[in-house]
Image (cartoon, rainbow, N blue to C red; front, side, top):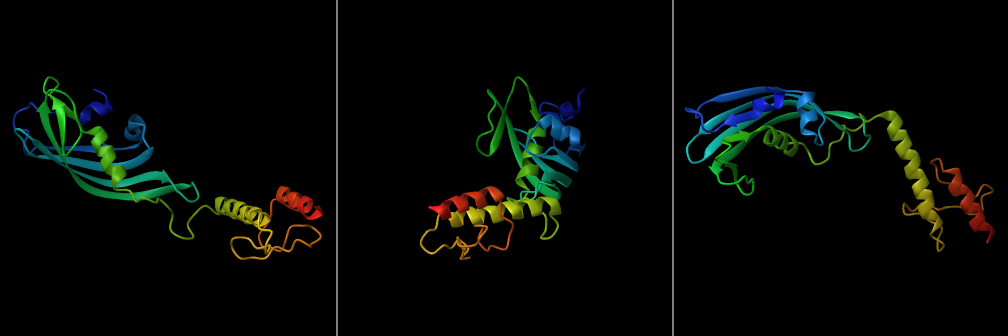
Length: 199
């Protein structure tokens, strides 16, 4: 039996109500799912609290996942603690639309792996970022350089008052043609600015 087979629950087994299933979810689980989250370590408990025409599972996942920071792309450890409910019933064809998942009666088993993964992902914040000051220093310096170059580039297109979007005045009469922005400027943009000043 493979690791993912352990998440398949036989709905036709007797006395399913009250049964508890437990898993230790690690990197191999996330690799098998092949989704957004690639690494993590969680303990998952699923309890069947109702059985009959509709089966109801309460799934509690606790642990951490590792995802890229949206700001600096370095690894970010997120704490996960989520409790979710899943309703399942037997039917003719598979369907996961609406509030209840329909599992073919001929198969008689529900695979909880994908649902556990989705519950984990849905519990994550919309913006996955380090706390202020905790991002990767090298990446943040690189981002600052690109933002300075972008500000300079946007300032090139403003011929009326020679100000960029931040309201910083660009001095087109400087010998180096760069202007007096405080941040470093990409030398390619400086060269273009010199050409502009010659016209």
